[in-house]
Amino acid sequence: MITHKSGSLTFFTPETIDGAAAQFFDAGISAGFPSPADDFKEQRLSLDEELVKNKEATFYARVSGQSMIGAGLEDNDLLVIDRSLEPANNKIAVCFLDGEFTVKRLRVSDDQVWLQPENPNYPIINITEDNNFLIWGIVTNVIKKV
Image 1 (tube, rainbow, N blue to C red):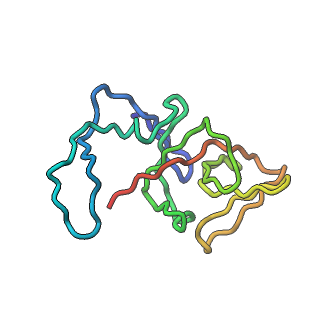
Image 2 (cartoon, helix red, strand yellow):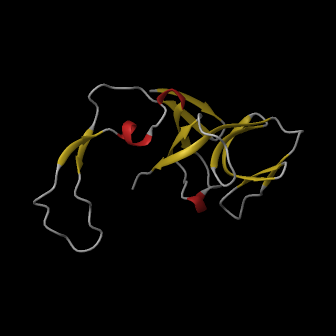
């Protein structure tokens, strides 16, 4: 895996490994009372196949900071980012803003763009023509440690 550190995000480029898949049990995991699992099916599961729709345009980045905790993105979480997706209002995006990468929720109205943090301790960022701004990709999934 190739890594690149930039500001508050560390980017990773996925490396395809043939035959790399984990065991997958297609029985559902009960969060209540246990149930007999005599009839489960065992299959192989590739997280790349589950989480990555466009391999050439997908990257991983590790979150650094607390500005998106309300959206479930916490420090050290791993983001799956697809650069081929169209930005849209309410999507969570990785943006390049004035020389640094940041992850925020997009707010788009008329000709205005705001970057909305999901933590009340952080300010909303109004994007103006004075900003060096680029929407780099759209967050599709988050991978967490428990």
